[in-house]
Amino acid sequence: MKSLLARGSELASSKEQLKILTEVSEKLALPSFSDKLKEVGLYPMLPTGVNILQVNLGKLCNQTCRHCHVDAGPDRKEIMNKETMQECLVALATPGVNTLDITGGAPEMNPNFRWFVEEASKLGKKIMIRCNLTILLAGEKYKDLPEFFAKHRLEVVSSLPYFQKRRTDSQRGEGVFDRSIEALRKLNSIGYGVPGSGLVLNLVYNPVGAFLTGGQSTLENDFKKELKQAHGVQFNSLFAITNMPISRFLESLLESGNIDAYLEKLVTSFNPVAATSVMCRNTLSVGWDGSLFDCDFNQMLDMRIEGKAGKISEFNKSVLDSREILLHQHCYGCTAGSGSSCGGSIA
Amino acid sequence: MAQETTYYKPEDLKKFGNIGEFGPDLAKKFFDYYGAVFADGALSAKEKSLIALAVSHVVQCPYCIDAYTTDTLEKGATEEQMWEAIHVGAAIRGGASLVHSVQALNKVKELGV
Image (cartoon, rainbow over all chains, first blue to last red; front, side, top):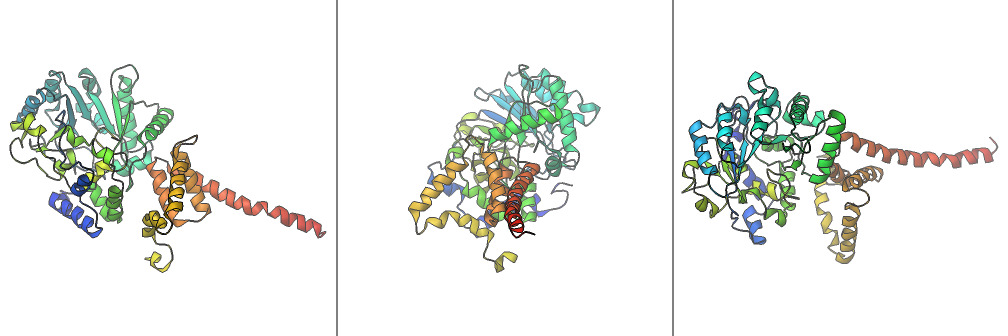
């Protein structure tokens, strides 16, 4: 599979994606997300303060997953340069910014990834790496990554759509499950996910089809039991994340004829409690070119934070802490049911 | 398209909540009870969902099959668990027919065959 961009798909355009979400919402007479927030007294959506800097090191990836909201893949070449990483480090040093959340694509494929982590770790902040697991087996260049992660006490967060092969491979590509298990064993062997080691390994579950996530704690118990029994693999926590109706998952919804039902389900499952804790309230997302966004999804929809402090080079925490968060219909994805964030359920 | 020529329409499932239009008090009692039945208890919500999937097949309710196929997936059930549950329902349904053959057996003997 190639990225939407490489295939010349209309869905590679964020404008086209937003247009589809608007058209479907109008057709089904679904309320706008802003109106829904007004109903529960949460509009405008305001930050609680930038505590997490989520930095996307680029769209280059060794995998091409069916649901990727980044439209990442081996054919994408956009990656963050060292100068922009330096600017991220300046922002990270700001008091109150406590966590660096590194994502991609496969962020490890950025040639300056290790330098970035080394510099960031000198600041004494918590660092998370969103690792797709298979990159750890992608050749000599990457094989010591587990030890590198451990040296800098990175919290590893890895996608594993399911504890069985069929569903995982269906979403992430043939053979991904077996390689993911091998990578998890490698991480376990140096202490990641092992109680008492202090090395945290969390897994991310997102549904393989057009349905929402159920109870995170039940799923975590199932994952722990199944992975331990069948593969001897351990991990710390499971983050259950809702699939956003954007990018390649939007393509999948359109192709399968599920777009109307899925969007309607997200809207009818709106949970005001989840809406109070959405990740955009304490997270700032940095694009590969240094542009700033309220979250990773707004980034992929090119919904930039406008005006002053719109680039990481202009990072100004007090200005950003008082901004208004940009909203669209995809935001229902974070507020449906138990809610969803990069750290899993929120309600 | 086939649904257009039958009484069952998938889009009617989401109107389930409207059944109280002409009888809100009883509908509320039913939905409160329904919600309590499916909450985590001595059985987990996932186990209850699998039971509901099996029963949906036994009572042959298309709405229930759609709802509980989705629900069991949302609760993280494997396809193996779902189909084992369906077979449990089918076995009971088949067994319920077959156990009545004891009556046929009795009758055969009563008739001195």
